[in-house]
Length: 331
Image (tube, rainbow, N blue to C red):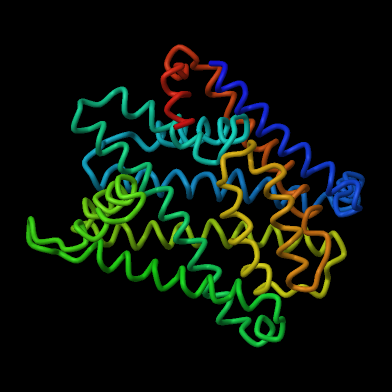
């Protein structure tokens, strides 16, 4: 318990330090939030996209992954758990925390073999979302190649995205290739890596879907759709902040990289880390105000995802989170 509190205080100190630095250096101005009062249409658009499109699409993605491994969780229940997971995403450190919580509700109602499969769907759901971000950034890179190559500061980032995309394609191909039982050479290869336990767990989780290729393809497309909608929000917020010369393709290239950093388990919704990441990314592309853009987005996202607290507290007897689940989320 003492260790947990010390770790929480350390994370809080990092977040406060980052936000203080950004504010004192003039890179983060909370007064710019009032720009929404002059453009209520953008605020309405953000709420509609998040509530009516992003959350239902994320629900459908996880529901398809559950069904593909034989877990018949109802679509309405999956929708409820997705909202509760979002609630914990913005109230506990780390973007993976909500995933662990919503998975906990499925796992505790299954037998041992079902629990393993439920845990696998959490891994696949998270990594399909990650692969969607990488794919989106790569497509935006190709579309916007001339501009990105004209910015020398973006070259390293561009090469990184190309490398990640190549690794993503290779991983999908390897994981879905039907090797004969006991003759998979990559199990031996992954067992030599430093993080072999986690890597093998991810690999075997994907292998469980090798006869469900359409599901993996469709869930990847759903992830792309979700990220494009969020990219559209960032684009409109950037224009509201005065960045009228930033192309949509440029936003689609920068935003996925910024959202990947938000998964670092420091603060709820990536506060602090996300501010610093988007400020740096925008500066690499020759723009300023990245911290302000992320700040407006994350505050609206917080207000939307806090709605997940309604089903959690209304059905607290069924959806109460145990200490065990919270310990699991930290590990």
